[in-house]
Image (cartoon, rainbow, N blue to C red; front, side):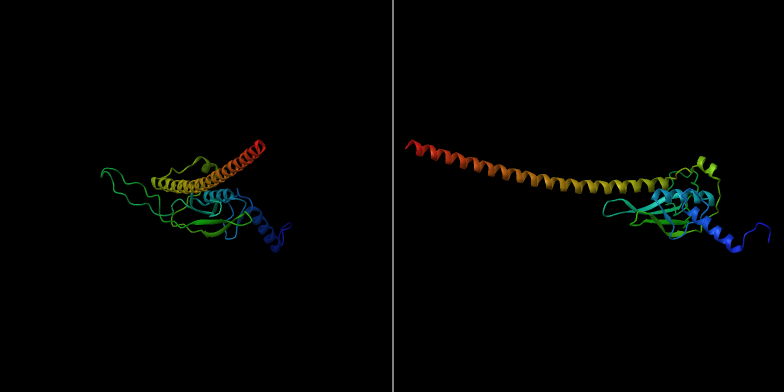
Length: 217
């Protein structure tokens, strides 16, 4: 053992301590995701997995999500490798056109994060293995490198936005119906009050008229 070296048990404790400290740091890409890993927010989870992807040599893609039935906020999110899935085959418009490069290879690498009641986001699923070669990039290169979106990815994003727009329209329709019901009830109540007030006024006039007639006689 060298002069200043620590006992093996102490070294292991320090390494574990450093790992736990790094796990809480959303900007560090060196920690491998694991089931039960927590994040303060969805964005923190995205940032972590994006940095992890950079370190490992693949590009992250934000994939499916689920919303709360109560308030419509996102409560579940899947983050995948950009080579997840397969590109749909489309008829070529021209035989002279070159076939597009393969950008989807059915890669199953992903993490799934879920929002807990406490507000933290928890990793509930993690698939590490990729079915394609990885090309690690340094963080500085990654900042200046953006993989252009493929038509399939653009279509998926359009479908996601369209589905979200459709949900918002349904919510607006439901709110409009509720508002119409409230306004209708208010109108009926107002009409009822008007009838009652007119009835009271007429009764007062009748009383005044009868009193005046008696005084004349």
